[in-house]
Image (cartoon, rainbow, N blue to C red; front, side, top):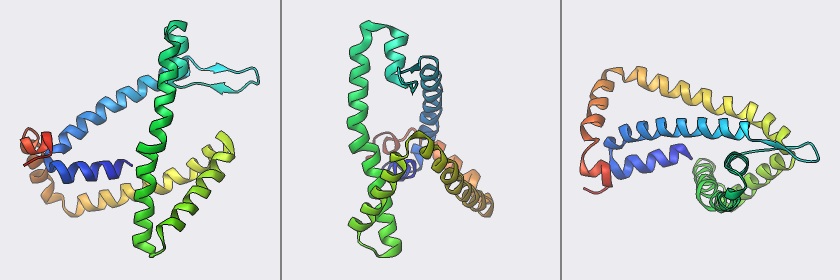
Length: 179
């Protein structure tokens, strides 16, 4: 998802969008830290002993019962967004990439991906945690290795590239995606 968004931003706005993505990343990290802190601070246990938390619980228990409507709205909009925005685009990009690599039909690839996601989610939080413990390093380590090798191989070009990004950051093209 992040790689797709960055690719689209670079294609539309050119290298001048990179400093803006760095700034947005800093704001996003601060927001995520705050959200996680509040979610942990205001999480609750159900009658069955299960832990429930997240932004909805932080709103309900942190701001009080007057804000239950906002918590419900957040949950509803988050659910709607989950189906179409982030996950749909990520699934499509993954399927198209796998189709390009394998030549297999996208419908079949999508169905296999959906079955794998269903199998993981059906196992609950414990299975999701186990799968993530394996998958995240398998995704992150090769990515970091390839990026490090590319930067090392083209180290002489890095200062000029950073200069171009900073120079174009305030151009109309970077700010609006138009020429």
